[in-house]
Length: 230
Image 1 (cartoon, one colour):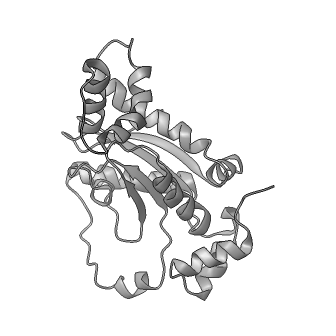
Image 2 (cartoon, one colour):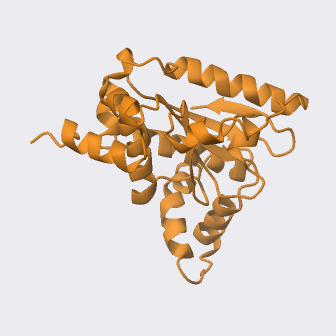
């Protein structure tokens, strides 16, 4: 049985998101019928914004004028799965305004069930054409996972759940030369890009239909530059 959201469920989700009548109809349309940016255009918007951020030439924004408009609905052009690290702020990194990005954050930028549901919502209901999985240099969550695997360190609370999620990337870089932490941070991005591409039933189908594109990226803390990887 096909588990893709049917029209009724789609409208229910869109209504719950606060989309007005016009956007409810928009939410039903296929990506090729929408006037929203394509995935490639969205990626270009992100990278141009990052260039402004790196160069200290960010757009000066007055958030007041679009407050009422955003209160009635949203149509983000990109979704970002990023680390919860306080030094990583996607709206700043890409010089985007409110309403432009649908951001999911978890320490270690990995896909869990809650994050997957959020990304399914933005791609299927809001029509977001691009998902970026963005790791960053000096990631503490990845460093902790390497330490646990290497030294059998015991962590308290729910931290072992985070370790389990990142461990596949650590295993992939076990025999690689070079900077183990950086290698694993990049591998973790690739692991989660691939996980999203095959995430059934919603995102995998949207990827196959070329309605959604998923890319990996690395944010460099020292320079602010975002490097596409994978």
